[in-house]
Length: 73
Image (tube, rainbow, N blue to C red; front, top):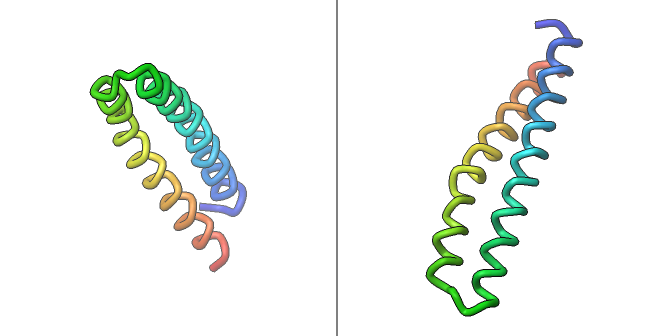
């Protein structure tokens, strides 16, 4: 891969991280609303929707980091 392709891939990965974190924020907010209204079981159920997002964000960040390092070598 050339430097431009590497840079584009990193930018795309980081844009996906942002999008997933925005979705995660909406889920976390919904879980907090449930919790504040006394619906703790529902809050946990809603918050579990974050598990996949957190995993995906971690993968995307690791990918961006590896690609960035490739560009430095």
